[in-house]
Image 1 (cartoon, rainbow, N blue to C red):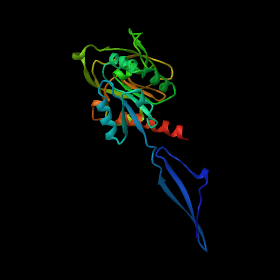
Image 2: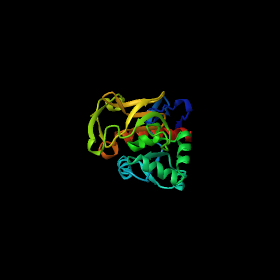
Image 3: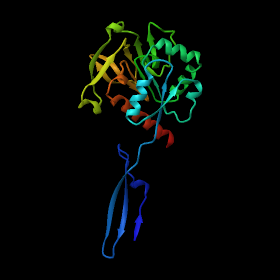
Image 4: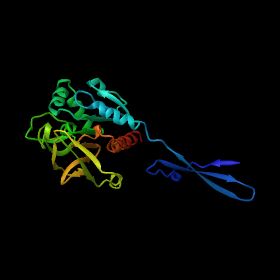
Amino acid sequence: QYNLSTKQNNVDVTSHFVARISFLQFHPRKMTVMEVHTTIPPPPIRIGVLELQGDFAEHELMFQSINVATTGIRTLEDLEQPNIHALVIPGGESTTISKLLVEYKMMGRVQEMAKAGLPMFGTCAGCIMLCNDIVDYPLQPRISAIDISVKRNAYGAQVDSFECDVHSDVKAWMNGKPLHAIHIRAPRISRIGQGVQVLARFGDVPVLVQQGNVLVTSFHPEITHDTRIHEYFADIVREYVRKIKA
């Protein structure tokens, strides 16, 4: 007595991935349509976290707290795993991370993956590693994944580190509590290239920016209790996975 209609044009996927399927119920006197809502789960993702130096463990704990799987990346072989859908470059010492990526013959492969569109997320030193231009250090090896210029240690030495709340125009963050930024020997984003979106500022200075699948912050969201930036990046990765599997 029941007929299931599965017409492709009758599927309406919203931002919450809700699909609508109509069931036609036949009755001797009337026919009714019963609409049933089912939730399509987001695609599973696994994020690689570079574990050469820096606060990679804090990133891993942050992603685990929002139920996102991570894998530590320490070798070229780790990078080649087929189930790695993104790469995080943690805060730390950008010169050390640069040298180790080159020494372990990983830099070229990471650059190739960035050009291919793999989502990447860098915080503090990771922001320096992912930028196109390191002010005053043109010869420092870098990944060059986002069109910005960054000045290292722009706010001073370790004793000049500071915390602050930053303003964001991102709809998901505008009405909630401010994003809290911890700057530790932080870089300063001094130039924004074409196609780069500023997601948060400290005064007039960009501190959280995005270009395509690449997200960088000049501060350390991984050492706070606020998961929103990591959740935002996880959504970027999910959208990337949906597209490559479509």
